[in-house]
Structures are given as structure tokens and as C-alpha cells.
Length: 337
Image (cartoon, rainbow, N blue to C red; front, side, top):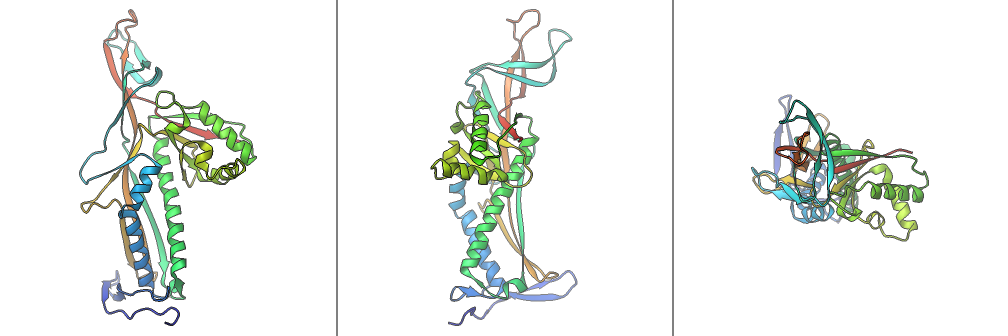
């Protein structure tokens, strides 16, 4: 078998371009001897591999280990989470008019034992990733090992991009409270210790008592420092160092998000075929290339609500007024040197 040899195609597809012309390309070429030089064969192998990983069960299993999530059939609503508060917690909310007089309330007390409900945020997360593969790049030849490395890099970048989408939604959620860490060291080990200490001091005791009760969403710029600190501590990875699950996100540094595992989740929507992710390969004749796109949608279940009993200003023991208000469940810890 000669290098870059592939089976002669027997089936061709015809596409009509925007200019009214036609273009033919095959979809049944196969890579031989671990190498090839046909763009259609490259894209088909890539999309088949992505579809098998995302919709074949491997990705769902890994996602459930990384962060609480559910995969629901098409046309159904996200599952509402509910737990009992573990301790009293003061809650600030938008002004509510008192039923007793003309005064307004902006603060109340959520009492241990009250039920806390968590539902989807008003804005769902649309995960989308597109990469263009030019014909003349592939025609020079490729190998299966190179294709595998490309797929692994694509998946890693996509994972961090998905994390960035979630982080942006959490910044606008009414159930996210902000805490600031300042004076962080520039030394990786000391900076990691400062971050862990800061997270520990800002645990929301109403929904968790230790870092192991949370999943952390961390900016990508902190990856190298945390990994270095873990190595110097003789640990295998960042999660061993932090003592909890962690995910990283790319883009702007929005801080570290502390998501309680018992109350927050991602609710992924399946299509009519039961697939969570849509894998598309589209011919781009103007660029002489293929566009490969991965699309998925999930609801971010982090919008927490609690019912507060507001006291009569004239008689604090009388609590006939009940209001449903937002509860600060997710903690966003901003980092500053």
C-alpha cells in the first residue's frame, strides 16, 4: 500500500452553490494505511468520531462525573431541584411593600428548615463550535495520528468555550453573589494556597459545609499555576489539590464560580432522535473548504428561590406576609493581585 492511498470513491454527492453552479464531492472515501489526502475522507472520519463520542454514551458518562447534569427528552422541562436549608441566612431582595403599613422590605431571614428551590435561569446556554478545514491544507496529506490530535484539541477548546458560556450566564443571574479576593501572591504555590483559603472562607454554609460540596468553574489562566502547585504538593491533579470537582473556562477572567452540587445542574436538551449534540459538516465552496460545527443546548439550573415570612413591624412575632424571593446560591469569587 502506497503512502496517502485511499479507495477510489464510488458515490458522489452534488451540491448547488449560491452562484447557481454545482460541485461534486464524495462521502464514501476511506483512509488506507493510516494516511490519506482527501478532504471529504478527513471530514467524514472527524465527524463520525465526534458523533460517536458525544452521542454514543462516553460524553454523557464523563459529564455526569464532572458536574451534576441531566439529559431530558425533547419537549420536557428541566427538573426543579429542592433541598432544606441547613442554617439561617439573611437574604436581600428587591423592595416589597408591607401588608401591615406603607413601609417596604428589602431584607429578610431564611430560616433553617425552609425549602430552597432551584430552577432554570431565564437564559439558556447555546453551545456552538465551528472549525473550517481548507482543502489545500488536507490535500498535502494527513495521518490518523494527526487527525486524532486535531480532534483532542478541538474537544479541549470546545469544553473551555462551553465553560465560558456558563460563566457569562452566571454573572447575570440574580442568585449569584459576588465576593472579592485581593492581595493574591504571584508565586504559583502561594497563589494556589491563597485561592483555596479564600474559597474556604467564602463557602455558602446554607448549601454546603466544605469545598467538596461544590463544583468550581475556574478561569483558564489559573490552570498552569494550580497544576504546578499540585505537583509541588505531590498530588496528581488540580482536583486533589482543591478537594472538589473543577472545570475551566476560556476568555475573560470573570472569577471562580462555586456551584453547589446538591442544587445546581445543567439540563441538556435532546432532539427527536435522542441526541444531545448536533454534528454538522457543510461544504463551503467559496472557500474551497468544509465547515464542521458542534451544537448543543442546555438550561442552567441555578436560579434559586425561597419563601420568606416577613414580620409585622409593630409585632415581630406576627409573620403573615409570605414573599417568594431570589436566594444567593452561587458564589462568584473575583481574583485580584
